[in-house]
Image 1 (cartoon, rainbow, N blue to C red):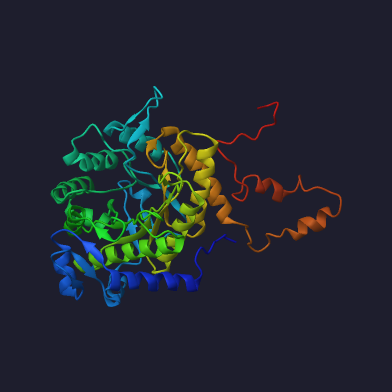
Image 2: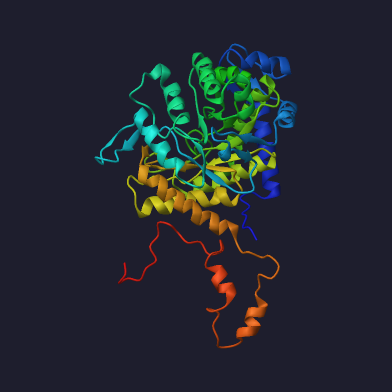
Amino acid sequence: MRYEAAFLSVDEQARVHETSLRILADVGIRVHGDVALPLLAQAGAEVDTEGGLVKLPPSLVETALATAPRSFVLGARNPAHDYAVPSPVTRFAMDGTAAFTRDFVTGERRYGTRQDIVDAMRVFGSCDLTVMGWPPVAANDRPVATRPLHEFAAMLTSTSKHGQHELHRRNQAPYLGAIISALAGGEDRARERHEASLIYCPVAPLVHDGPMLDAYLDLGAWDVPVCVLPMPVPGTTGPASLLGNIALANAEALSSLVVFQLARPGRPIMYGSAVGSMDFRTGAFLAGTPEMGIQSAALTTMGRFYGLPTMGAGCATDAHDTGPEACIEKLITMLPSVSAGADIVVGYGELDGDQTLVLEQILVDNELAHLVLRMVEGVDARDGAELYEDVAEIGPGGNFLALQATRKAARSGEFYEPALIGRASYDAW
């Protein structure tokens, strides 16, 4: 029996949805750029063309939800790694674009480079639970104007799994189209295979960045999937309650969905989130907190409420080094989204509030993911799993060590054997 957790009740899901619709209709969103405003005005939104303020009627949200596909495949350069969403199981992805890396050879904490992306993808590719790569660091050794393209290319050419990243400017879009078309073997195959996708982060609260949005709308011609990833933080860029922040993030996700579906109905969209919390003593952003995990799971629940494929942040930590704090925080931020049924959880490989890549941590995080998945898989309750006959055969005072079922159990998935955790006796250790 699979373990599932409800982080929002049915009534609370409806409450978040209604609050989000009210935000979009009465408060509105601010939309920059050249492409989206005319589309929204033509569709019936109330648009202030000078200030960019847009108020969305609920009917536009309903139309967008109706045209968004409920399932699609995130293709991979090796088709064996294709990943269909929604998925009956959760799988995992790299974290992305940290400023720093801890050099594997020297131990130095330094700015990331293009080569670090390549190296990390090699480690990432060896992990059995990963399905999607992000460039784990910014390529600080490449020019700012073209840096996302270098990061995209380094990632896509260094992994056989699906790749996801972002662009910053509209003039970068044709080059990314050329990259994904070349790797897929032509424009038609790129549209069919969906081997790369985009991360789209609205600017909290309730703002859409013009250059990024225009670039993403242009890439609709290649039918590139988009994962919408709102990131408000309670008390800073979001209201200072978990429920209020969840409703705001949901409003940002819905407004993004409207724009992308108006521009190209049927374009594949994932409902994601990457919220955090604030250290009220310092104002610093925190990623490795219970509140982060709760919000990610609640927003996964909202994505499922709408019937959309879901992705959430998790496996996050604010620890500055590997060790107990990192493992504790990664576990408590991973478990909620997995137990809520997220299709993908992002977070492998990084420390320090997602700002430092550590290659060894990628492998540790894969082990943590195995432990979390084992917990969520729960109890095997198939017919006969009670093993009543074994109990009757052994009776009071015996032991079950020599029975066939015990031998089978040693090689079954019900008792997970970790790869990185030592269970030898103290003397053997």
